[in-house]
Length: 198
Image (tube, rainbow, N blue to C red):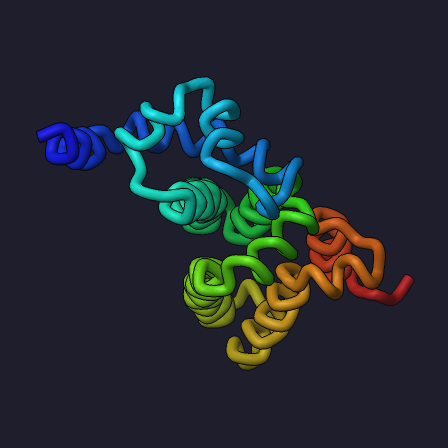
């Protein structure tokens, strides 16, 4: 009976689940994922371990929900990119600004632990990158049709962003070059907006 009640509560409390996993985002970014126990996560969420199990089956379910919540937050850049009330090119800058602000708390240690300890959950990152590429492909194609961008094959533009996102989410690259995600992101788009020539 208790197990069924717990299952029902998990299904019927998406708002509470989201509230709890959002408390874990800064915790995971600071501490990484290695050696994190259910007790650690319960403490970070300010609830008992017994209460954690009312909302989640396992540590991996919590981690997957936390990653999904963070990616959903980042996905809101699409709203800025498609805001018809704003000038076409200004929309791009607003979307980039939003992204810069919302990826600034993602740490190298979190990415490294996620990729190495939970490689099956890394698929969430890969799916997110593909989602971003589809959004950008549509935006670039429309911008070229309407004359906002030079007539460059949008697949080349997307290829550039794809390579960038691959490096942005590569913890080995970031660590080797002593870079944070925000530094790479800001430098890439500064180069994209203003070029490399003085």
